[in-house]
Structures are given as structure tokens and as C-alpha cells.
Amino acid sequence: MARHKVEIANVNTANIKVLSLEEQLELFKRYQNGEEEVKEELIKGNLKLVLSVLKNFTGRADNLDDLFQVGVIGLIKAIDNFDLNHEVRFSTYAVPMILGEIKRYLRDNNSLRVSRSIKDLAYKALKVKDELILKENKEPKAFEIAKRLHIPEWQVVQALNSLKDTVSMFEPIYSDGGDIIYLDDQLSNDESLYDLETKIALRNALQQIKEKEKYIILQRYMMGRTQTELAEEIGISQAQISRLEKNGLAKIKKLIK
Image 1: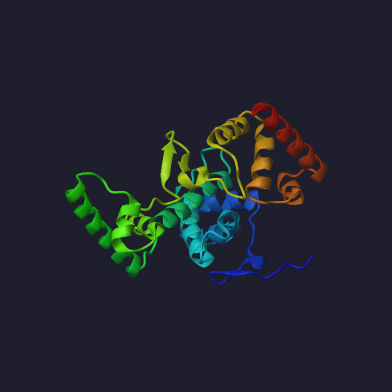
Image 2: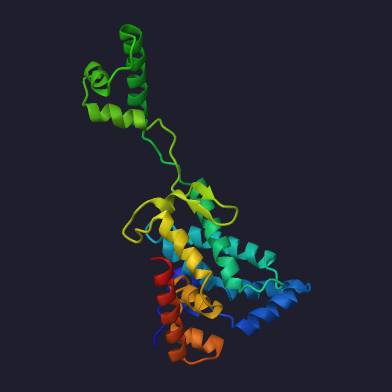
């Protein structure tokens, strides 16, 4: 099958190597034993983790190259901090770190630019507002300010709102000491209409199914991997992967009802 060339940050995604579990384990052992030169192999062999996370941000950012590079920083942090003694797959550990790095970047670089003309109008509206408060001894309505300035009411509202502090879509709004929930997670969009309660129920359900079923579901629906890829990695047939996936999904549906 032909592999389409897509370049992000000068990286040809069609040529990205994916490490097998055995290769990854061996490289981590060497790296954690002081062989710094293998770090580059670990980075290149896990770039698809970064690409899988970037799928969540398609259409939300102007420059995916920047997000890819930020995601790689998250990947490097995950490689540096990964502990082989914890019986957790590297992908399970790395994806939240990559996601967190990208969300922090978007949070810190998401300020809205307000035009000079709107700012000027806002300050005029504030001046009139102060004058009316002194004269009437009460907070004026937007239409009263608009009348004094001889402009439509909506322009006054728009101008005054431009002075308010913006809240990033990636502002943390909840943390239970582990997972962080961001404002963006709670805004409905075409991709996801799940509320907080459903997300928590789904997370809890994943903890109650068999480890192999959980791994397959996360790899299939978070990482975008195929059943064939997982069959080769785990060493079982594609039919068995399909059966484990269906069983896991069926259990999750029962648990979150």
C-alpha cells in the first residue's frame, strides 16, 4: 500500500519508524544505563505518539509545525522521566505528558488581539459611563452609553467586553491530584459532546476491564493503531484482537450506563 508523504516540521511522517516493544525496552535499558546516544533513537521511534496527539488539535491551531515541536518536547520529558520499574507501557505514560505540553503552550499563547479602534471606543465608553454614574448615581445601561456616543448598542457591548480578561480554552478548571480537566474539555463541539460525568465514568470503566482489553482499546481509539499492528505487536491473531476489543467495549458500555 502506498504511503503518503506528509511533512511536519521538516519530518516526513511516512518514514517515521515505530519501535517494537522489545526494541523500545532494550533502548530504555541502555539509555537508563548511561548510553545517551540511544536517546535519539527513542525520540524518532516514538514520534507517532506526537502525531496521534496532534489529531486532537487539527483546525484549532494555525501552525501544526509549532505544535509538533512542542509535542516532541513533551515526548523528550517523558523519555527522561520514564521508569522501567513501573509496569506501565511507555505510550500510556507519554501521551498525557505530550498532551499536557501542547495544552500548556496553547494556554500561554492564546491571548486574543484587540484592534486599536475597538480599544479606543472602549475607553470612550468607560469615560461616558463614569460621567453618567456621577450624574445619575447609578450604573448606566449599554444603550444609554450608546446614545451619548451616537453609535449602536452592540458596538458598546463589544468594546467593553474587549477589555475583559480572556480565559484560555486550555485553562485548568479541575484536578483530583491526577488527571487535569481543562476548560476546552467542557465546551461542546462537533467532535465531542461528552460531559464531565461521562468522562469520569469512562475513565473508571477503563480501570475495571482486563489490562489487555484496556491496552487494545486505548491503542485503537487514542493512538489510531490498526488491529493488524496490534496483532503483530502482541503476538496474537487479528481475530483475537478484534474479539478482545469488542469484549472490552461491551464491558465499558455496561459500566457507564
